[in-house]
Image (cartoon, rainbow, N blue to C red; front, top):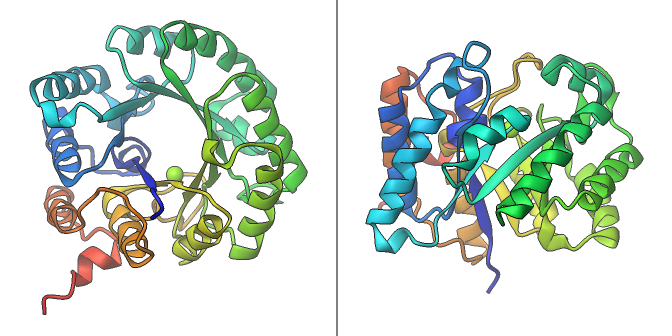
Length: 304
Ligand code: MG
Protein backbone atom coordinates (compact mmCIF):
# COMPACT_ATOMS: atom_id res chain seq x y z
CA UNK A 1 0.00 0.00 0.00
CA UNK A 2 1.31 3.44 -0.87
CA UNK A 3 1.95 5.99 1.82
CA UNK A 4 1.07 9.53 0.85
CA UNK A 5 2.00 12.61 2.82
CA UNK A 6 -0.44 15.48 2.77
CA UNK A 7 1.14 18.83 3.60
CA UNK A 8 -1.67 20.98 4.95
CA UNK A 9 -0.99 24.54 3.80
CA UNK A 10 -4.36 26.14 4.58
CA UNK A 11 -3.14 28.09 7.59
CA UNK A 12 -0.42 29.76 5.54
CA UNK A 13 -0.79 29.59 1.77
CA UNK A 14 -4.57 29.44 2.13
CA UNK A 15 -5.26 32.15 4.69
CA UNK A 16 -2.65 34.60 3.42
CA UNK A 17 -4.66 34.91 0.22
CA UNK A 18 -8.04 35.35 1.89
CA UNK A 19 -9.59 38.75 2.53
CA UNK A 20 -11.21 37.70 5.80
CA UNK A 21 -8.53 37.62 8.49
CA UNK A 22 -8.80 34.96 11.18
CA UNK A 23 -7.55 35.54 14.71
CA UNK A 24 -4.76 33.55 16.31
CA UNK A 25 -7.39 31.75 18.44
CA UNK A 26 -9.38 30.75 15.37
CA UNK A 27 -6.24 29.59 13.59
CA UNK A 28 -5.26 27.55 16.65
CA UNK A 29 -8.71 25.91 16.65
CA UNK A 30 -8.14 24.99 12.99
CA UNK A 31 -4.69 23.61 13.74
CA UNK A 32 -5.99 21.39 16.52
CA UNK A 33 -8.80 20.07 14.33
CA UNK A 34 -6.34 19.33 11.53
CA UNK A 35 -4.15 17.39 13.97
CA UNK A 36 -7.12 15.46 15.35
CA UNK A 37 -8.16 14.54 11.80
CA UNK A 38 -4.73 12.92 11.42
CA UNK A 39 -2.69 15.45 9.47
CA UNK A 40 0.99 15.05 10.25
CA UNK A 41 2.51 17.95 8.36
CA UNK A 42 1.00 21.36 9.00
CA UNK A 43 2.24 24.68 7.72
CA UNK A 44 1.46 26.96 10.64
CA UNK A 45 2.12 30.42 9.24
CA UNK A 46 4.72 32.82 7.91
CA UNK A 47 7.24 35.09 9.58
CA UNK A 48 6.57 38.02 7.30
CA UNK A 49 5.85 41.68 7.93
CA UNK A 50 2.36 41.96 9.35
CA UNK A 51 1.84 45.38 7.75
CA UNK A 52 2.32 43.65 4.39
CA UNK A 53 0.57 40.35 5.13
CA UNK A 54 -1.83 41.02 8.02
CA UNK A 55 -3.36 37.56 7.65
CA UNK A 56 -0.15 36.09 9.09
CA UNK A 57 0.05 38.42 12.10
CA UNK A 58 0.62 36.48 15.30
CA UNK A 59 2.40 33.53 13.68
CA UNK A 60 4.87 33.41 16.59
CA UNK A 61 2.04 33.24 19.10
CA UNK A 62 0.30 30.56 17.05
CA UNK A 63 3.43 28.44 16.75
CA UNK A 64 3.98 28.75 20.47
CA UNK A 65 0.45 27.51 21.18
CA UNK A 66 0.94 24.74 18.63
CA UNK A 67 4.16 23.58 20.29
CA UNK A 68 2.50 23.54 23.69
CA UNK A 69 -0.40 21.55 22.26
CA UNK A 70 2.01 18.97 20.83
CA UNK A 71 3.93 18.70 24.08
CA UNK A 72 0.78 18.10 26.09
CA UNK A 73 -0.63 15.45 23.76
CA UNK A 74 1.48 12.34 23.36
CA UNK A 75 -0.49 11.14 20.35
CA UNK A 76 0.70 14.14 18.36
CA UNK A 77 4.40 13.38 18.85
CA UNK A 78 4.84 12.81 15.11
CA UNK A 79 3.17 16.04 14.11
CA UNK A 80 5.51 18.30 12.16
CA UNK A 81 5.18 22.06 11.97
CA UNK A 82 6.50 24.14 9.13
CA UNK A 83 6.72 27.93 8.85
CA UNK A 84 7.58 30.13 5.91
CA UNK A 85 10.61 32.35 6.48
CA UNK A 86 11.39 34.76 3.66
CA UNK A 87 14.78 35.86 4.97
CA UNK A 88 17.14 35.93 7.96
CA UNK A 89 14.87 38.26 9.89
CA UNK A 90 12.06 35.74 9.56
CA UNK A 91 14.43 32.97 10.59
CA UNK A 92 15.44 34.84 13.73
CA UNK A 93 11.81 35.10 14.77
CA UNK A 94 11.15 31.45 13.99
CA UNK A 95 14.20 29.71 15.40
CA UNK A 96 13.50 30.01 19.11
CA UNK A 97 10.11 28.44 18.59
CA UNK A 98 11.71 25.29 17.17
CA UNK A 99 9.67 24.60 14.06
CA UNK A 100 10.31 21.15 12.57
CA UNK A 101 10.76 22.70 9.17
CA UNK A 102 11.23 26.09 7.57
CA UNK A 103 9.97 26.84 4.09
CA UNK A 104 11.57 29.16 1.58
CA UNK A 105 9.97 30.61 -1.50
CA UNK A 106 11.27 31.21 -5.00
CA UNK A 107 9.66 31.79 -8.32
CA UNK A 108 10.22 30.18 -11.74
CA UNK A 109 9.90 33.47 -13.61
CA UNK A 110 11.56 36.85 -13.13
CA UNK A 111 8.31 38.83 -13.41
CA UNK A 112 6.53 36.78 -10.78
CA UNK A 113 9.54 37.00 -8.50
CA UNK A 114 9.65 40.80 -8.82
CA UNK A 115 5.91 41.24 -8.26
CA UNK A 116 5.66 38.76 -5.45
CA UNK A 117 8.84 39.19 -3.43
CA UNK A 118 10.38 42.24 -4.99
CA UNK A 119 13.67 40.74 -6.09
CA UNK A 120 15.17 38.66 -8.87
CA UNK A 121 15.17 34.86 -8.76
CA UNK A 122 18.90 34.76 -8.06
CA UNK A 123 18.57 37.31 -5.26
CA UNK A 124 15.86 35.19 -3.67
CA UNK A 125 18.14 32.13 -3.81
CA UNK A 126 20.97 34.14 -2.28
CA UNK A 127 18.67 34.96 0.62
CA UNK A 128 18.10 31.25 1.07
CA UNK A 129 21.72 30.39 1.73
CA UNK A 130 22.22 31.80 5.25
CA UNK A 131 18.81 30.54 6.37
CA UNK A 132 19.61 27.04 5.10
CA UNK A 133 22.98 27.10 6.89
CA UNK A 134 21.39 28.08 10.19
CA UNK A 135 18.52 25.60 9.83
CA UNK A 136 20.94 22.76 9.07
CA UNK A 137 22.93 23.60 12.17
CA UNK A 138 19.77 23.19 14.26
CA UNK A 139 18.73 20.07 12.32
CA UNK A 140 15.61 21.80 11.08
CA UNK A 141 14.34 20.57 7.71
CA UNK A 142 14.23 22.98 4.78
CA UNK A 143 11.43 22.97 2.25
CA UNK A 144 11.71 24.97 -0.96
CA UNK A 145 8.65 26.25 -2.74
CA UNK A 146 9.05 26.88 -6.41
CA UNK A 147 6.09 28.83 -7.75
CA UNK A 148 4.56 29.25 -11.22
CA UNK A 149 6.32 26.11 -12.53
CA UNK A 150 3.86 25.60 -15.38
CA UNK A 151 2.49 29.00 -16.25
CA UNK A 152 2.97 32.60 -15.12
CA UNK A 153 0.35 35.37 -15.21
CA UNK A 154 2.98 37.73 -16.68
CA UNK A 155 5.15 35.50 -18.88
CA UNK A 156 2.78 32.74 -19.98
CA UNK A 157 4.00 29.18 -20.37
CA UNK A 158 7.15 28.52 -18.36
CA UNK A 159 9.94 26.57 -20.12
CA UNK A 160 10.65 23.26 -18.39
CA UNK A 161 14.38 23.81 -18.53
CA UNK A 162 14.07 26.93 -16.36
CA UNK A 163 12.18 25.02 -13.70
CA UNK A 164 14.59 22.08 -13.81
CA UNK A 165 17.58 24.40 -13.44
CA UNK A 166 16.07 26.03 -10.36
CA UNK A 167 15.17 22.70 -8.78
CA UNK A 168 18.77 21.55 -9.40
CA UNK A 169 20.03 24.69 -7.75
CA UNK A 170 17.76 24.31 -4.73
CA UNK A 171 18.89 20.74 -4.11
CA UNK A 172 22.49 21.79 -4.57
CA UNK A 173 21.90 24.34 -1.81
CA UNK A 174 20.80 21.43 0.44
CA UNK A 175 17.09 22.07 0.45
CA UNK A 176 15.52 18.81 1.68
CA UNK A 177 12.34 18.88 -0.37
CA UNK A 178 11.10 20.97 -3.28
CA UNK A 179 7.42 21.66 -3.79
CA UNK A 180 6.58 22.16 -7.45
CA UNK A 181 3.86 24.79 -7.56
CA UNK A 182 1.13 25.46 -10.07
CA UNK A 183 0.41 28.76 -8.37
CA UNK A 184 -2.24 29.99 -10.78
CA UNK A 185 -3.82 26.62 -11.51
CA UNK A 186 -2.98 26.53 -15.18
CA UNK A 187 -1.13 23.21 -15.53
CA UNK A 188 -2.55 20.28 -17.45
CA UNK A 189 -1.81 16.60 -16.91
CA UNK A 190 0.43 16.42 -19.98
CA UNK A 191 2.67 19.17 -18.63
CA UNK A 192 2.73 17.60 -15.18
CA UNK A 193 3.78 14.21 -16.56
CA UNK A 194 6.45 15.72 -18.73
CA UNK A 195 8.00 17.91 -16.02
CA UNK A 196 7.94 15.31 -13.23
CA UNK A 197 9.39 12.67 -15.57
CA UNK A 198 12.38 14.90 -16.19
CA UNK A 199 12.76 15.90 -12.55
CA UNK A 200 12.56 12.27 -11.49
CA UNK A 201 15.50 11.42 -13.72
CA UNK A 202 17.69 13.84 -11.81
CA UNK A 203 16.40 13.78 -8.23
CA UNK A 204 14.86 11.28 -5.80
CA UNK A 205 11.12 11.40 -6.29
CA UNK A 206 10.60 11.26 -2.52
CA UNK A 207 12.08 14.75 -2.29
CA UNK A 208 9.55 16.26 -4.68
CA UNK A 209 6.09 17.48 -3.79
CA UNK A 210 3.17 18.56 -5.97
CA UNK A 211 1.43 21.84 -5.16
CA UNK A 212 -1.64 22.28 -7.32
CA UNK A 213 -4.38 24.86 -7.50
CA UNK A 214 -7.83 24.05 -8.81
CA UNK A 215 -8.45 27.24 -10.79
CA UNK A 216 -9.32 25.37 -13.98
CA UNK A 217 -10.59 22.20 -12.33
CA UNK A 218 -7.39 20.29 -13.14
CA UNK A 219 -5.87 19.84 -9.69
CA UNK A 220 -6.92 16.25 -9.00
CA UNK A 221 -6.08 15.14 -12.52
CA UNK A 222 -2.67 16.74 -12.14
CA UNK A 223 -2.19 15.04 -8.78
CA UNK A 224 -3.13 11.71 -10.37
CA UNK A 225 -0.59 12.29 -13.14
CA UNK A 226 2.13 13.06 -10.59
CA UNK A 227 1.06 10.13 -8.39
CA UNK A 228 1.39 7.74 -11.35
CA UNK A 229 4.99 8.87 -11.68
CA UNK A 230 5.66 8.12 -8.02
CA UNK A 231 5.12 11.48 -6.34
CA UNK A 232 3.90 10.80 -2.80
CA UNK A 233 3.83 14.27 -1.21
CA UNK A 234 1.03 16.68 -2.02
CA UNK A 235 0.22 20.12 -0.67
CA UNK A 236 -3.42 20.99 -0.11
CA UNK A 237 -5.50 23.33 1.97
CA UNK A 238 -8.56 22.66 4.08
CA UNK A 239 -11.66 23.65 2.13
CA UNK A 240 -9.52 24.83 -0.78
CA UNK A 241 -8.66 28.08 0.98
CA UNK A 242 -6.50 30.58 -0.85
CA UNK A 243 -5.91 32.10 -4.23
CA UNK A 244 -3.27 34.23 -5.82
CA UNK A 245 -3.39 38.03 -5.73
CA UNK A 246 -1.59 38.32 -9.07
CA UNK A 247 -3.77 35.94 -11.01
CA UNK A 248 -7.32 37.15 -11.51
CA UNK A 249 -9.82 34.37 -10.86
CA UNK A 250 -7.22 32.05 -9.38
CA UNK A 251 -8.91 29.87 -6.82
CA UNK A 252 -7.20 28.33 -3.86
CA UNK A 253 -5.04 25.33 -3.38
CA UNK A 254 -6.67 22.02 -4.12
CA UNK A 255 -8.75 21.14 -1.08
CA UNK A 256 -7.46 18.59 1.40
CA UNK A 257 -10.86 16.87 1.44
CA UNK A 258 -10.78 16.36 -2.35
CA UNK A 259 -7.24 14.99 -2.27
CA UNK A 260 -8.13 12.58 0.53
CA UNK A 261 -11.16 11.35 -1.41
CA UNK A 262 -8.90 10.56 -4.35
CA UNK A 263 -6.26 8.90 -2.16
CA UNK A 264 -8.85 6.79 -0.35
CA UNK A 265 -10.09 5.60 -3.73
CA UNK A 266 -6.56 4.65 -4.72
CA UNK A 267 -6.11 2.85 -1.37
CA UNK A 268 -3.17 5.10 -0.64
CA UNK A 269 -2.48 5.50 3.07
CA UNK A 270 -2.67 9.06 4.41
CA UNK A 271 -3.72 8.48 8.02
CA UNK A 272 -6.22 11.33 7.69
CA UNK A 273 -10.01 11.15 8.18
CA UNK A 274 -12.23 13.12 5.81
CA UNK A 275 -15.35 13.55 7.95
CA UNK A 276 -13.79 15.74 10.67
CA UNK A 277 -12.32 17.92 7.93
CA UNK A 278 -15.77 18.38 6.39
CA UNK A 279 -16.95 19.63 9.77
CA UNK A 280 -13.91 21.89 10.06
CA UNK A 281 -14.58 23.21 6.56
CA UNK A 282 -18.09 24.28 7.64
CA UNK A 283 -16.73 25.90 10.80
CA UNK A 284 -14.22 27.97 8.80
CA UNK A 285 -16.94 28.82 6.28
CA UNK A 286 -19.06 30.18 9.15
CA UNK A 287 -16.17 32.31 10.40
CA UNK A 288 -15.56 33.65 6.90
CA UNK A 289 -19.25 33.97 5.99
CA UNK A 290 -18.80 32.02 2.80
CA UNK A 291 -18.91 28.54 1.43
CA UNK A 292 -15.44 27.11 0.84
CA UNK A 293 -14.86 25.60 -2.61
CA UNK A 294 -14.21 21.93 -1.72
CA UNK A 295 -16.78 19.84 -3.59
CA UNK A 296 -16.26 16.88 -1.26
CA UNK A 297 -17.22 19.02 1.72
CA UNK A 298 -20.17 20.58 -0.10
CA UNK A 299 -21.63 17.23 -1.12
CA UNK A 300 -20.42 15.22 1.86
CA UNK A 301 -19.62 11.51 1.97
CA UNK A 302 -22.13 8.84 1.01
CA UNK A 303 -24.39 8.30 4.00
CA UNK A 304 -25.69 4.85 3.05
MG1 MG B 1 -0.55 27.71 -3.28
